[in-house]
Image (cartoon, one colour):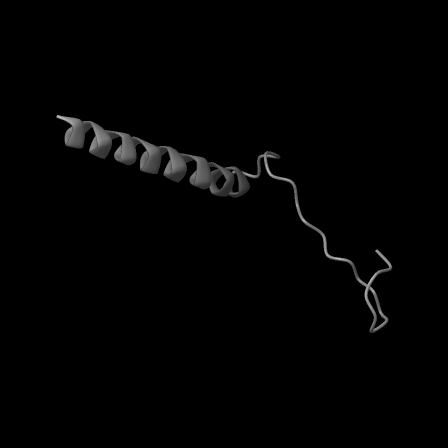
Length: 51
């Protein structure tokens, strides 16, 4: 009984993680503004900083 309940909870969490992870991909495919783009700094010097 307890083993079946633990298995169901683990399966539910796995499905929740799959849906949450794929929602950003689907939003990008449909060009919805749900995810923010990341920008890298373009610094010409060899040292860090300057962003």
